[in-house]
Length: 247
Ligand code: NAP
Image (tube, rainbow, N blue to C red; front, side, top):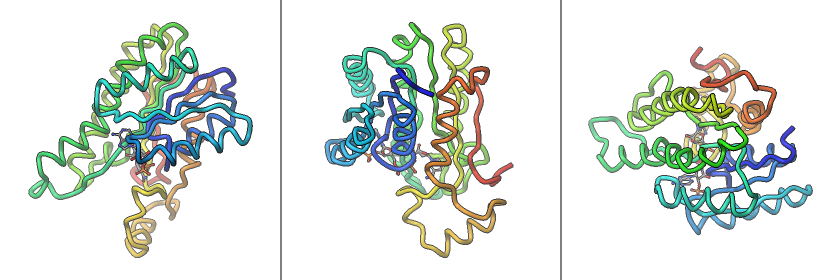
């Protein structure tokens, strides 16, 4: 499905990003696995090795996407290695939850800088080389950005911003055959949700029509759809993968 395609996945070393990187590589894409810092390189290289184990091609690049210059290094390194970029997945994300009355300026800025500005930084550097052949950009938003979530003013703002960024970018680059879409996962089993105890998880699961958390593979399947020609007439869209949580 993605033979000869080159994909950059930010935060591709674990969680949802890792599942997306593996799914793309299994469909023939060459994948750049980004992680935030040197300390994560070991996990990123494990993903590279896993991809190599089934005959795929990947390499790891350390870059903090919230930095404009490091995002440029990521894109430059990807093009140097594979010659082009067809697919960019802005998946890197963090949470720093707390009620607004107690939220520090730093916690607000950090979450905006990684989740929202990080996507801008990567798109800003990748889109010009992508204009040559067209392609697909996928932004990882969240149901928190669609419905709002108490205790996540920073995260909900960043993720809602990504929905706007997705639509504006889709309009700007449609004529260059670059489609831009977003995925809004609900409650997915990863390190991000690992901190919650079983009782809380069970309570949340009860409120979800499908009565369970989602898996990273279920999000990766939608990323594969949006990255491939199966979604060739879809742009500016946000697809929820949330078991019906906020319909
Ligand atoms: P995760 O397991 O916590 O992984 C986060 C990933 O983002 C890691 O690979 C991390 O790299 C990377 N990252 C963080 N800051 C970065 C930075 N400054 N530069 C580059 N990479 C950075 O999270 P996840 O659950 O897989 O979430 C992936 C995306 O889905 C996020 O955007 C998240 O907001 C969104 N999402 C998740 C859920 C959920 O329920 N899990 C729901 C809705 C939306 P390091 O390992 O180097 O830190």
